[in-house]
Image (cartoon, rainbow, N blue to C red; front, side, top):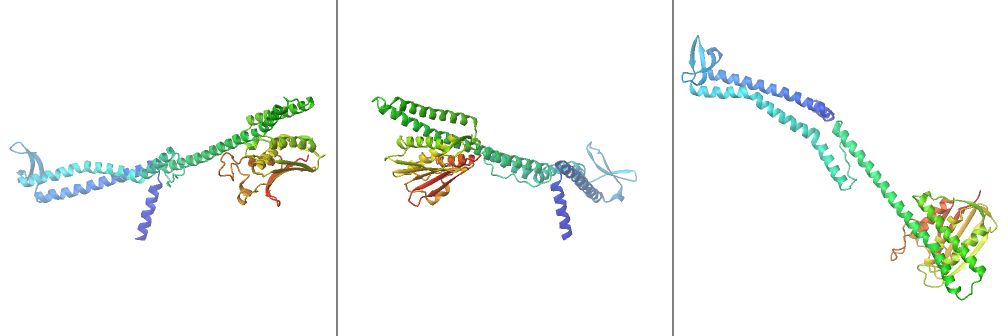
Amino acid sequence: MDWLEEQAQGLYRKLTHMSLKKTLAAYIFLAVLGVLGCWLMTWQICEGWEQMLTGGSGRGQLLYIQMADGTMGFARQIEGMVEELPGKVQRALTVVTMVQNCSIFVYTVAAIWLVAWLYYRNKLRQPIAVLTREAEAIGRDELDYSCAFHSGDEMGSLCNAVEGMRKKLTKRQGQIWEEMEEQRRLNAAFAHDLRTPLTVLQGYVDLLETYYPKGRISQEKMMEILEMMGGQVDRLRRFGDTMKKIHSLEERGAVRRRMRVEELARRLEESAGMLVSGPGEGIDTPVKLLFRVSGGKDVEGQMDPELMLEVADNLISNALRYTGSLVEVELEADPDTLCVSVRDDGRGFSGEELKMAAHPYYTGEKEQGQHFGIGLYISRMLCQQHGGSLTLSNSIRGGAVVCAQFAIGD
């Protein structure tokens, strides 16, 4: 019995994994055999009924002739004599003959229906249902539905192809989402970094509006201010040109040139002074700036001053938002490394912020949704592109400390 079950299961597996064409041919062949077998069986049964109704084959030959009244009927010929059969026997023989003659057509129609039903049930119904659900899910933009159907025939291959398409669509959707997210980060970085030079320019404009009409600005000082304003405008222009050419923050590389730390320190001090004295966002009380170069003022290295100033401006802007009354900026350099540290006397970083503050769009200020948390993320990216890193910590004196490190060696 177990052997029969194994053979039946093996035959079922073979039929399941056969191609659609071979399966249909097998079903038709089996149906033809079944029709012939049933027809032969029915023919034999009908022959038996005829013999029983006519009294057996030894009692003459059965004829189907025209009767005396002009109708067709059955008669029996015995030794040259034709004998009409009784009416009941005539009717029974008519039924038996009709069954015998029509059975082939009935069995053929039944076999066609059975082949169609079995073929659809065993080979088409399940994969069609799977493909229909998958198409509906894709139409709803739901790509987590798996189009899984394990079969060795063409429908299994079709389901596998649709499943491959679904996986590619899922991957492409993820790529599109990443591209949109990267574009969002890029736009946020562009908007964020425009604020610093604009703040500096606004500070210079306020300075001129306050003191120039009173004649308290010398010609030499005026030219110095205009030169610094021109530098900020040139910085905006270069930044705009860069943003037009790149499609992600990772594409923005460092453009280095040889310069002295002293020159960078001067530009950084001017920019920091304007940020502190200008109309900074979230600054309600006067803030004191303490700027110092603790070492390496005469060092020369390969630097991208625009990139470094952008990082420093981001760090100072963040410090101004959280400080109480003091922001300290310290610059230290050696022949290989330059470090810009910014400390404030605010509340410092929480444990979560130390881990997450440099991630894109993170903000610890739940009530201030306008801060996208992009500044530290941009700074970290730019430090990495300059061969350095960005570290966050809390000072033992209180407040937050952020250190931007850049590689400046040849």
